[in-house]
Image (cartoon, rainbow, N blue to C red; front, side):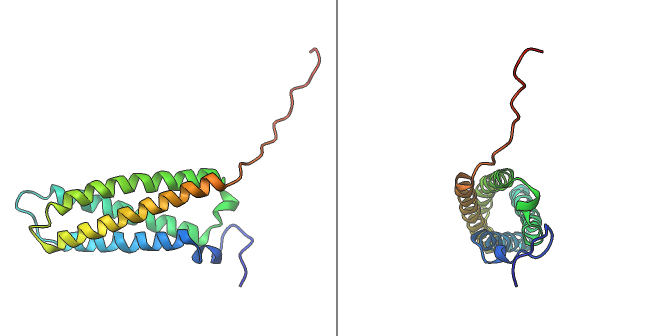
Length: 160
């Protein structure tokens, strides 16, 4: 089966690409982090650490699923400007990587209370590394992508 020529349809090339593999790893790490942290016991010192980690991992899970579905069913190059889309995904990956790094450190301090929090911190750090790799990949793609040439008409010459 060849690629779809329309804007909407299954994008078979995307399934065989590095960004798809990175998104799939991000999804698995996000899902495992949510499950492990959600299954952990309540903390005696308060649940702020647990709540922050759950907020970050659930936000990452939702946005990653939306981006994965968009990339699978929509030919983004036909709809969006390639540079805009790469900047958007780079910004998202950098943003959530920073928050995952902070949240993983925070929940790792609760690892002594339960092994589930230690496992959640592990998958949080794994998600952090994957989001950083995705951001670097998007940056490299952005630098390699050709700039669009825009036609700007010359102003009329002569006196008005």
